[in-house]
Image (cartoon, rainbow, N blue to C red; front, side, top):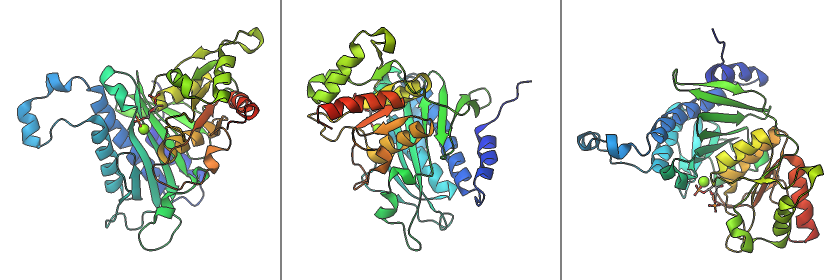
Amino acid sequence: MTIFKTLGQFIIEKQADFPYAKGELSRLLRDIGIAAKVVNREVNKAGLVDILGDAGQVNVQGEGQKKLDVYADEQFIKALQNGGECCVVASEEHEFPIDIDSEISKNAKYIVCIDPLDGSSNIDVNVSVGTIFSIYRRDSIGGRPTMGDILQKGSKQVAAGYVVYGSSTMLVYTTGKGVNGFTLDPSIGEFCLSHPSIKVPARGTIYSINEGNYRKFSSGVKKYIKYCEEEDAATNRPYTSRYIGSLVADIHRNLLLGGIFIYPATLTHPNGKLRLMYECNPIAFIIEQAGGKATDGRQRILDMEPTALHQRSACFMGSSEMVDKVEQFLRSEDDR
Ligand code: AHM
Ligand code: MG
């Protein structure tokens, strides 16, 4: 018989790493894992809804066909509301944070920032999408949590993770003690530990950037791309260009194989496109915990002071030596 470890078992075991843990974070992670399974079920049916969806059924339940990003948002929020460990959730789908002020959540001390379904433009064409989440402990005591509780630096995250709904579905997370990956076994409906202690190679041969924006890049970024394309046997160049357009999928591949993911500032997105609180920070935490590097070209992403919930940041993330290299180009062009 194969011995495997489920996400639930792993989370409980790891609770011992935190001597004063009372199990709240473990329960919160478990709640997120459950919602991820529900979302996975729906993502896997994308495209089938029109074929299988029975008009009567839709009417009886009072639920029209929802866009999957709205559906995912509802599932994660519901799981966090019902779980009782989260006092406020900030989602890409909502302009303002959602206060969870209920009887079961009255002692909740965790804040969750989430992108419930990232890369959703890829859904209709059967390409991988993901969920990204970030967890903080609230700072303030008494009363309802404040915006200051939410807008903490990435370095204050107590946990972060992503789910990639791909050719198989995986959940990857960190609580600041390394990174572990779990693959969903659909036959038993459990995430099973498949990628323990993930480490990103210090250098790789993959660069991931939307080169369609080339003309809008700074000269440092342009020069780095040219560097990636040059031939040089000693450094294994030219590198391979791989870009899915789903952050989680691009990051997951580069995390396992080594590589760099770049979404720089462009003429049309002067602060980059990706959102600091629920895209850049959680991914940066995971990348660093896997031994990689994540910066905005100038400073560590995890050290950035957030000023707004939906603020954007440029990002250069992945294998440490590759991030160092692109920063050299940015410095030499003085365009960071
Ligand atoms: P979304 O939150 O609207 O889905 O956008 C985020 C996505 C990321 O998953 C991906 O890395 C990026 O947008 C791709 O952007 P672009 O199409 O500009 O290359
Ligand atoms: Mg997104």
